[in-house]
Length: 261
Image (cartoon, rainbow, N blue to C red; front, side, top):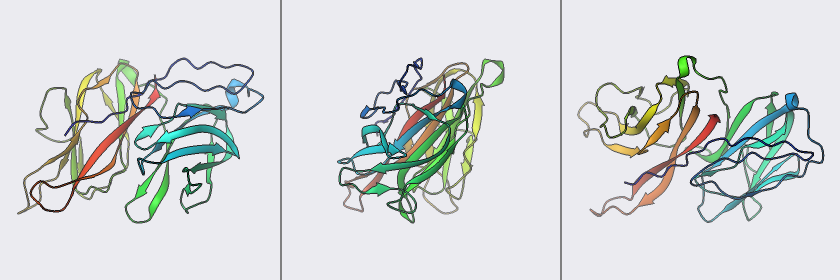
């Protein structure tokens, strides 16, 4: 299965008399962003906001903050540019082309509290139990010590009982996994890694008497440079027909957000 990866990196943020957007270098970045603030807040009172969307591939999402459109045309399995917004209390609303909103509860704005100089990612996707929901993640913008990198893996899929291996690119998922996930959930935390080129494998966990481990997905080439912090979001990408005539096969993908550098 080919890997679908949205790898992002910060470009230099330009501040002007209007609220500006920083560009996120992404192979799958979505949409056209707009800004409608007439006054640039002082640097100490701004925050960075990134949105990741997983949903109907035919839909395009418009994102509003406190009633003002900040991003248009976000498509499934993609992320926005990093949006530079004022810190403080906000109401975030993501609507598809039919005007329906994503959130938890459904069709209501998402309340956000953004600290000054913070970096926050909001994931809009399918909750395995409750349907379309939002998930808010505070991102780490502190570099690792000793010129290391940091990687956080966030499971937004409905896959259960996975082991996750982070191996040098070209290697196979062997030995002990970096994340053992017998229950299908874990608290996403940042792991320090040496700079290099990796491959991240998502593998079914071996169960007593069950089928042998199967690779659900792997990223392919995943470079990490010194002093970079990255978040890798793993989620469902739909189904494909089963060639043997059984149930359709679930497939997965990922999106990568640059939290630092």
